[in-house]
Image (cartoon, rainbow, N blue to C red; front, side):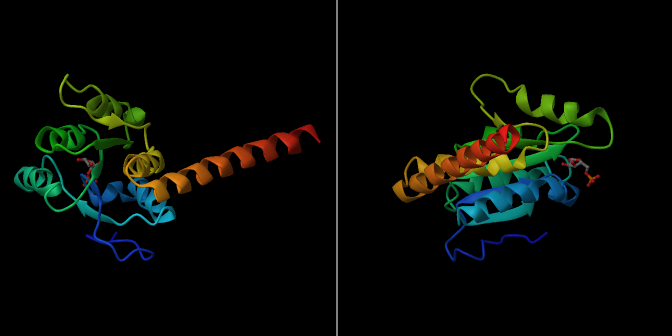
Amino acid sequence: MSTSTSTDQSAGRPVVGIVMGSDSDWPVMENAAKALDEFEIPYEVDVVSAHRMPREMVAYGEDAAGRGLKAIIAGAGGAAHLPGMLASVTPLPVIGVPVPLKYLDGMDSLLSIVQMPAGVPVATVSVAGARNAGLLAARILAAHDPELLDRMREFQQELNDQATEKGKRLRA
Ligand code: RP5
């Protein structure tokens, strides 16, 4: 896992932060990075553990908007407090990714992330749903970026075409 990187395709400053509680989360979280790569969205990657490095975690959340980030994707497993704690200290949209661990099939991670108190939203994707987290971040950015919006429409058309083709093959 690389830290504080932007994509190869884009030399721009990171606009999405991908953070996780441990480097052991990376096999799941790299799918968020791959989705952002597909849309040439610059991002940064880091380990920011809510429990093992709480002061750094608060600093990351507090500084994120000022550093130019527009959204944060946060993944964690088990007692997964990272997305919610980041959402409590940043005004940016936070997308939470429940990472499944050895026990409980990710239910512990999911429930830790999704059950946020009113006023502190986290957009929670499915267990191990880091690809959708990346795509959701792309949509958030696309709302203010007509070019990115067009690319998202193209992507949706590709999904449509692929599904249609699969139906055709089944019917043949
Ligand atoms: C969580 O504890 C991390 O997000 C990770 O999913 C889990 C286990 O971390 P390691 O013990 O593998 O570093 O905070």
